[in-house]
Amino acid sequence: MRAFITVVGKDTVGILAKVSTICAEHDINITEVSQTILDDMFCMIMLADISKSTVGFIEFSEELTKYGEQNNLSIHAMHEDIFNSMHRI
Image (cartoon, rainbow, N blue to C red; front, top):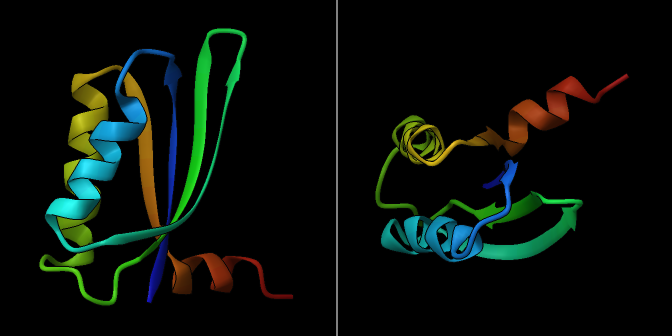
């Protein structure tokens, strides 16, 4: 099982490190990362293996969202099954 994690917000030191730390704390392995800075905006997409997660997906997603709200970032986690369902013709 995999999840897509997106992060968008004003660039500051440590965004990638903190999101990665939250994943690591729950045994979630980041398998791919794409990130860029557009002007002064940080934009990142992660693909993460959630099959060995120590927490439920909803709890994990809510933790990321809460961290984002506390740090003026938009962070969303989407389960791969939902992503695939949205993009089927």
